Length: 272
Image (tube, rainbow, N blue to C red; front, side, top):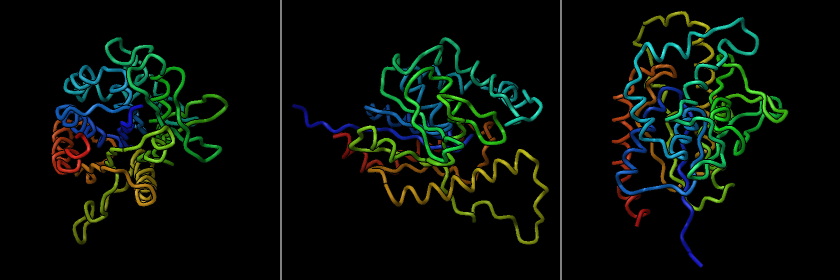
């Protein structure tokens, strides 16, 4: 009988700051790390799905070629507001490209994977582990008010970051003995303070919704990481960036790679 411990890679929520996850994964892979389980919330679910489907390298190249024009198409497809400003259909179409997730189901994945969403009516996190992977990712990234929720199995699902921005506890529920978690949310308010006397601009509807979501994620993140800390916590210095600053991809990826170097000793001991 093997005594090998089951190791989970947990990728947190945070919108555009999630590009730092790419740098973290690059650095972990270079060091020979391969997870037994991947659990992700929101942008972490998107990137986690690529790892589990064994298309991370193709996804990495896709992000490198992602221009502002291509990015804009994800956020310009507005409709008359019902439950959200955006339908999210362009994102699903992008994820379903043949060299990315395609029509993969969870049963097709190379590594066990779970996406975390929030059940809006039951007010709790939900683990998505069955069915269409791209649709599960779409549910996990459904920022309230921005994207339409996803109705699945009699539940109305929105962004997993509301209830589990860094899903360490969910990974343990799935049998993880060791958790390597990436937190891209927690930051000090000092990082975003205005200069003395500066009047903040009136926020747009988008900004108001996103900043409200971020406040909830930050507070939830601090609490959950205190209650159930991972064995290794990687924190790229991206807290000063806003949710939709996707244009900063290269810098964010590099920051993620540097963050892995900061836990080199602990990681080296684990990989032994």
